Length: 358
Image 1 (cartoon, one colour):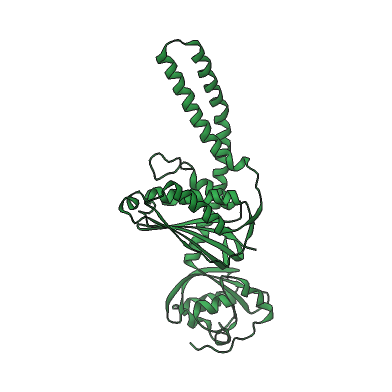
Image 2 (cartoon, helix red, strand yellow; image 1 turned 135 degrees about the vertical axis):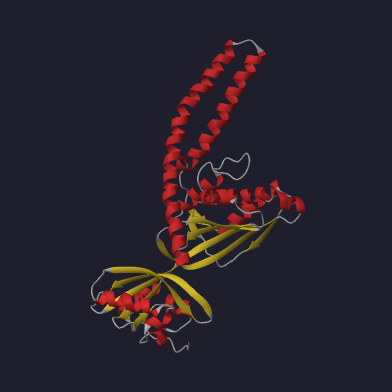
């Protein structure tokens, strides 16, 4: 496929160039009126080459598009969705979800093509958002319900301790008080994100990483290596620095603990990696720029049994874990309109924090 001089986009369709999804505007005969920049990049073909050509040749199944356009011509549907494979220059075909709808002008159809991998990711993010909101309400209500009887149990144990003389019985009351205090501490941690005010200021993500790095290396001074792969061009942004430190610390601390065998072998490694993502969609919003902070470790990976539930409260892959670290981290990042994603296989686990940039 040849590359020509970039053609000036039709002014009516210029806003489509701002989208990260692949957009084509076609006539009823399948000829391309407009292709946005994302579609150019995906196909490896210039806009000038695409416009005026039959768009069906860009698919492995051109007849499916012809049938869909025929249905549009007959007004059989308002919007049609189907799966297809886009041909790409020097690349494997790309599986996409095609959405075909009538344009503003008669005889024009707008085709939106979302890579299926991206569609799956968006669906997963939507589930995370809905689940996080449900978790937030559940945790808040449960914690408040626990607080009052817990205080009564502790108070009764203290009064009982004052009345008994047997050392054995006093030890029992002390166990009750100790366990009540432990549960109270857990409840306080559950309620912490909802109590603490959001303190907004200028945040440098690399200062956040350095703070977390120093804390973790103080706990694991000899047997853990932490690498930095920073994009120093990332600008400061407005946010709650302490919340982001805590969110990152929770992720890194989990990684350090998961690396127990690697630490014993002397090759445990965690990597901080920062990048700028352009034209990305997460949390159902499109952002021109976003921060990507990756926390990558070479540990055993997240157990398959909990891989889809690691951000749920009280779910932990470690004996003795509270299962609150990642839940709180996700809550703090979502308060910055961001999201945490996880990609894990044995030998490489990547927690990616995405936060919009100005």
